[in-house]
Amino acid sequence: MKNTLFAFLTFTLTLSCYGLDRDYVPRAILTKSQEKEVIALAQKCGMEEVSRISTHNMYPSPFRGIRVQGPEQIKDREVSYQVLGMSHSEWLEPGAKPGKGQIKLGNFWAGKPYTRKQTLLKVGKKEYRVGVIRGMTAEECEKILGMFLKGEYELGPAVNKKTIDQVGWDKPNSFSRRGESVSVGFLHKAKDAGFFDLQIKMVGKKLTIEQMFQAIP
Image (tube, rainbow, N blue to C red; front, side, top):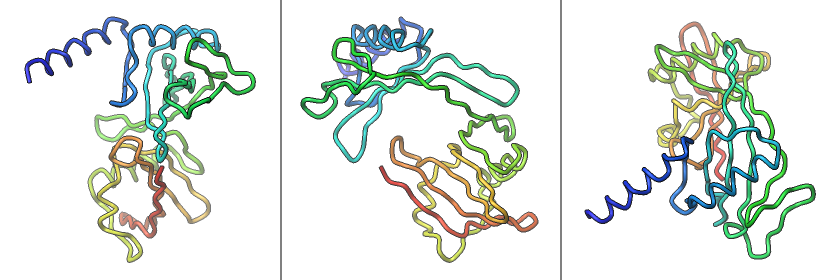
């Protein structure tokens, strides 16, 4: 037990020496030298600065991937930052190779980074980030999110009560309105476990989840 704890603490301290944020899944942990390669490749692909490196499982396959993120730029409610998806040959199928236009460095390769934008929602003293808002104001989204966080909603007859317990209410993904139809997206409580799309109805102060769809990776 002591040896295990020591190894964990040593690994944590080693990761902290770069001043970067890291979020690695157990089967995809980068070494110090690999991290240097990842950062060098990200710069070759056009990223000026790297602030975060994360790895993820590519369910339902056994493969794993890497995501590199640049520093955030925040203006009012808008958050923007660069994102770069990266591949590692040892974490993919045998014989996997870079695609057209991708840059390779060692066992890693990647294409071009893209800019991701999110909107800040504030409920109480906490902030939540949402990737997509369509046909709604941020204030309307905050009201709905606040009701979900407090459990102030009812379930329609078509909604599975057991499945609703898997929704990560603190992980909103999207808000969308088309006419009278309103849908809200939330990630699963568990990491890399998919997301939910909820079809809701608001009548006065009453919020009802009429339908619920689940996307499983």
